[in-house]
Amino acid sequence: MIVCPGEDLAPWIRSLKGLDPALAIRVWPDVADVTEIEFALVWNHPPGELRRYPNLKCIASLGAGVDRILGDSELPRGVPVTKVVDAALMRAMTEYVALAVLNHYRDMDRYRRDQERQQWAPRFPRPREAMAIGIMGLGQLGADSAAKLRDMGFAVGGWSRTPKQIDGVESFHGSEQLTRFLSRTDVLICLLPLTPQTRGILNRGTFQGLRRGSYVINVARGGHLVEEDLVEALDTGQLSGACLDVFREEPLPARHPFWVHPRILVTPHVSSLTDPDAVAPQILENYRRVMAGDPPLYQVDVERGY
Ligand code: NAP
Ligand code: GLV
Image 1 (tube, rainbow, N blue to C red):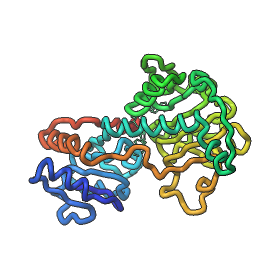
Image 2 (cartoon, rainbow, N blue to C red; image 1 turned 90 degrees about the vertical axis):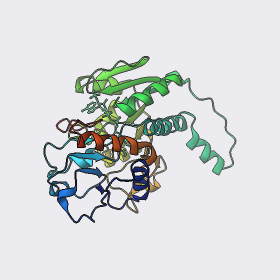
Image 3 (cartoon, rainbow, N blue to C red; image 1 turned 135 degrees about the vertical axis):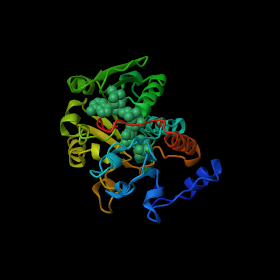
Image 4 (tube, protein in one colour; image 1 turned 120 degrees about the vertical axis):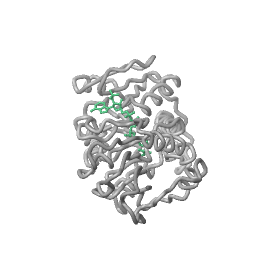
């Protein structure tokens, strides 16, 4: 069964049927017999819905994030939940993050403003090793962004729950090392999962812990950011700008101040989109595994929240 209200599911059905034409797929809410559903592909499902299926053996997220699934207080207990792990998803995220970093590093907003005034004003960028990047979350996505930005010559540090060893990337972990991580950071990138521990982590205290004039890139979830604190930090000059791909409410409501803020770049949750053709094989593999009684790949830890 696929439960993704509002999404265009035709590409998913085409990709899955292309791999296994005999696959029986029901598209929610068009499910006559709840007992025949054994595997659910899910994105933004209505809370409480998944407990209606007594034979459910796996809940598969159609993205890397599982916060909406785990946030369902009526989620059936004991059913494994999986996430997407995919090279194309990772590459797209790293591409977006690198673009946002380089856009800031090479002062592109300022040149755009210069162009509007027809002003020819060349400036040297500062040495790239002097612009320290700090990545919150060094999982599938954060670790790849860290390695690629390091290869571009930036000083990269990362913060995670447990210590990491990534060549040439300074590792910080746990709440006790957060202050030290922030104090060496000029560009803060959020690639954390949204959990009770990380909700609201991009807040006034975090911004104050950064070097003055820092830049923030949020590509994780809107729930990580305290929006009012971001605006305040931009107003006081503690932050010089922000690039935001995710928002507390999506689509970003009309007349939201972010739409018109001169130092916020808004994109509509596109930093890394799941490609059905790339991901259908792992979904099918997991379907076959759970039907054979084997554990699925890429299972998340429901208690930990990611
Ligand atoms: P992941 O592999 O699960 O990695 C999560 C990382 O966050 C890990 O390094 C983990 O530390 C760290 N972490 C978790 N809780 C923490 C805490 N309380 N304190 C410090 N570090 C903590 O996740 P991923 O696949 O890289 O994806 C990250 C997030 O990106 C997703 O959850 C999703 O929300 C977002 N995303 C957004 C888009 C988009 O289009 N905007 C696309 C894909 C994903 P440990 O390794 O030590 O456990
Ligand atoms: C997208 O937001 C994802 O979690 O894959």
